[in-house]
Length: 115
Image (cartoon, rainbow, N blue to C red; front, side, top):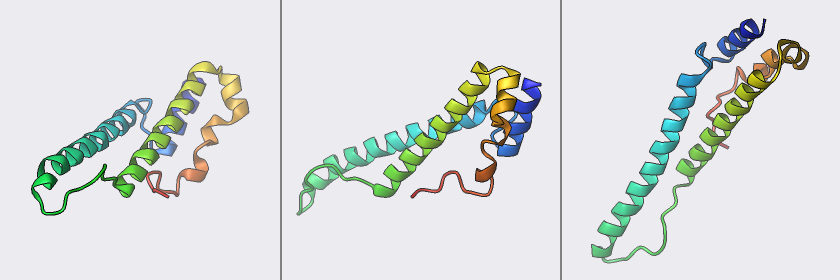
């Protein structure tokens, strides 16, 4: 029963039948890429900008990239909590809490939409 509910829920939520491991890996990879982008951007500014007429003071922040990083982190944390609940609860508890319907309201929303 637990596996059936788990697979049905994950298919419905578009998070994969593999337990969402591929999605989790892609989210973590995207977070690493954003961190790398921030490092490379700062490195380029520090190397290139000193030769320009106007020097750059402080760290350049990219608000959109930071919002994307925060949103990816939120989505990954939600997935982790969801997966942990399925590991910790028995089939009756999963059914009683209706975990198979947890993400139903979000099916029509873009999970990666940044506020």
